[in-house]
Image (cartoon, rainbow, N blue to C red; front, side, top):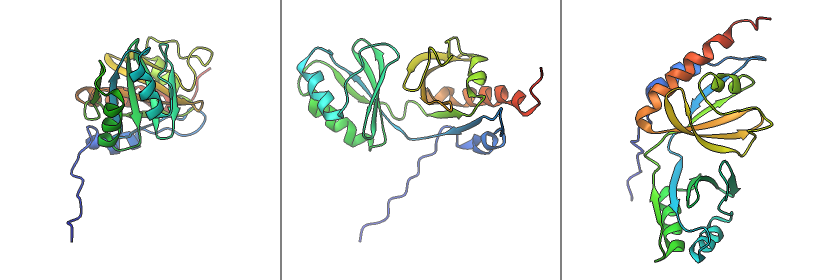
Length: 202
């Protein structure tokens, strides 16, 4: 009989889970912060005009976005544009399986497929005041007429470089900092959320 598999991984923000829960604000100015650890992330580089790119799109079931800020989704995968020949594949599937399938699709053509799941973690910021919290330290125009669900852009929040993805119009955002900067970013966001506990002054 096989021994049960024990997941011994510890997320970069496991030590801040209680502080993030305690920082949650409810009501019309509500905002919450959680970590969604261990999301599969695969960095993909390939010539978008190549046959390899066509094979990769068929494997993913989604096109490779061709413009800054654009994403495409199908099944468990979301593909975010990082550059003219670079994308980040975010997935609910196992990283080894996603990486193997994409490498097979790439074949011997120029390009690369690299599992970077351990390189970043995922913070989810959501609620009516989420945009205002981000606007305290993000240089992007996050107004809905410019930044809407499905948009994902490399930017900074405070001094931390992140990939920022708006998931829905609640609004809910997912931020992907490098794991070594996740503690700083989480504490920055917790501090930025603090004012929304008080009354909305005229």
